[in-house]
Length: 157
Image 1 (cartoon, one colour):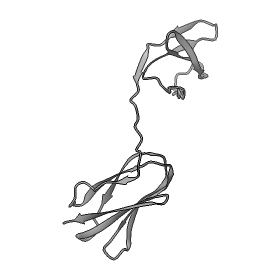
Image 2 (cartoon, helix red, strand yellow; image 1 turned 135 degrees about the vertical axis):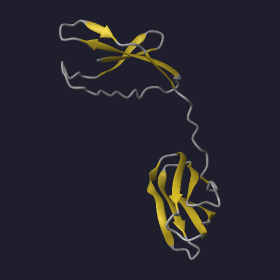
Image 3 (spheres, helix red, strand yellow; image 1 turned 120 degrees about the horizontal axis):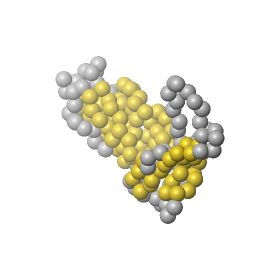
Image 4 (tube, one colour; image 1 turned 45 degrees about the horizontal axis):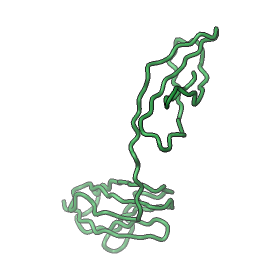
């Protein structure tokens, strides 16, 4: 299959080798990595048979949205707060770094680590379920690189 994208004219941007004739379903993928500055994209496949004849697929259209990356490190208040038993914690990372999102009790004891991984700049959400915990105040700590922020959360049963 030739993969074609339309700009002013149709242009071949890739090729995916077919599996030939088959009675079993076959899945194919292709990633267009060269879409910088483009918003409305139109694609089609050119299926080329062994004898050289070809046929075009219907056109597939895609509209890309602009992704706005955060400019600063930020931990938002959980929602809902107070919560029972689950709450959502939203945060932003401005620079790729090792990121940890952890929950602590009033004595500073680690209750649960929700996130502990390398993360790229972006907007994130995590869910904390306190169903197995006692009612009370808990703290959420976000760490990414040298940045740290805390929020206070109230679990009410």
